[in-house]
Image (cartoon, rainbow over all chains, first blue to last red; front, top):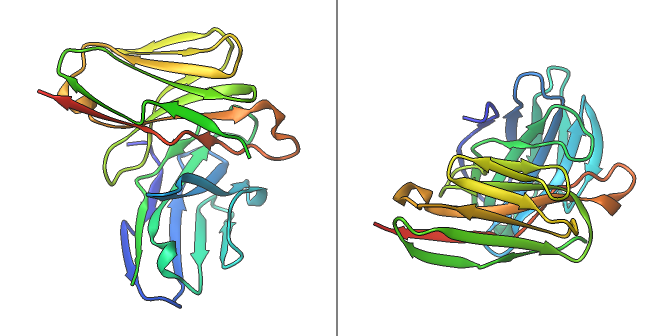
Length: 114
Length: 115
C-alpha cells in the first residue's frame, strides 16, 4: 500500500459524458501527479500540482482539467468523453516538487467509455 | 520529448533463474527509478537511484545508475513466481528546464516466471 488513494476504482460511462476522478496523496506529500495508461501509449504524464498550484503540464487534452484543493487532495475532470479516453488513470504523489522526487502511485481508476 | 528505450519487451524464464533488464536514453537523466506493476494495479516503486554509478539493492533486486547517466539496469536474482509483472524504468531528464519535472517512463518489460 503506497498510501495514495484513488476513487472510484472502476468507472463505466458513455461518450460525451463527464467524469471526475479523485486522489488523496500520501500524508505529508504536497505534489500530486496524474498519469494516463493505455495499451498503446504506455504511461503518459498529464499534469502536476504542487501545494494547490499547477506546476507542470504534459500530454493533457483541453477536455481534461485538474485541481488540487487546500486539503491537498486532487481531482481530474474528464469531459466530452470519447472512446479513446478509456484507460487506467493513475495519481502519484511526492513530498515536494524538485527534480528527482520519488513518486508513489495509487491503485488507479479504470475508465471505460462505451 | 524524452525517450527511454527499455529492453527486453518481454521475458519468459524458469523459476530460480536470474533476470536482467535495462533502459537507455539518448539524453542524460539525473534520476532513475524502477517500478513493478501487477495487472490492474498501480506501479510500485522498487528502487530509486540518484547518483551516477550508484548501485542499490532491495532484497533480490539490484539496480545501477549508469556512469554515463544515460542508462540503468535492473537485475532480479533467483526469480520466483510472484516476480511476474511488468517492470518499468523511469527517470527525470536533466534538461527538462523550467518547471518541467515530468517523469518519463519506458515501455516496460513483461516478465513471466514458469514454476
